[in-house]
Amino acid sequence: MSIGHTLLGLLESGPRHGYDLKRAFDEKFGHDRPLHYGQVYSTMSRLLKNGLVEVDGIEAGGGPERKRYAITDAGITDVERWLATPEKPEEYLQSTLYTKVVLALLTHRNAADILDTQRAEHLRSMRILTDRKRRGDFADQMICDHALFHLEADLRWLELAAARLDKLRAEVAA
Image (cartoon, rainbow, N blue to C red; front, side, top):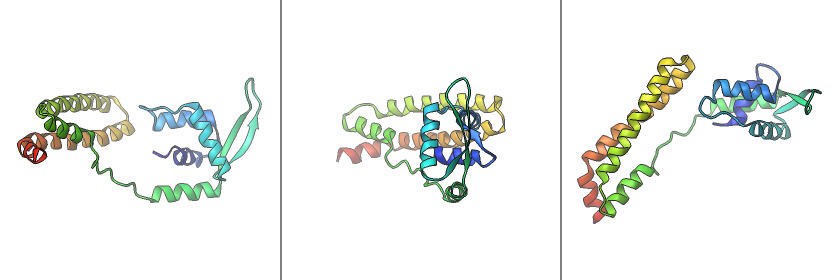
């Protein structure tokens, strides 16, 4: 995820302080990975330097001065370009799991055990996500569905790999 573009998008609704941006980000996107304050301020500094935001005001308080940031026209154009650009699908051609299976076969270990252990881990993760989906709001349900569909695809691959282990063993041993 592009944190800079996400923060820019949040600024389109109006100027905000870094603290407000962090809170909005965490509320909408950071359930599992909240932003660190330093990450917000370093990103805002970069966006300011690149002319994508401007300081809309500075407030003195009990602590350090609080800058309020506003998105510029260039920032809006940058967000529009980012939103219109499709994400490259993750093809998983450098899968750690596949590497483990092949190495297990090459070293005469039990690759079926690796697949079984991974299947159990995927199912555990799916149970957690399904419970979270049941309790969550609509946005949480959508992100859980995304993760669940990927885990389901992985499970299909695990089953296929288990069914093809003998053929893979013969091929990697050659």
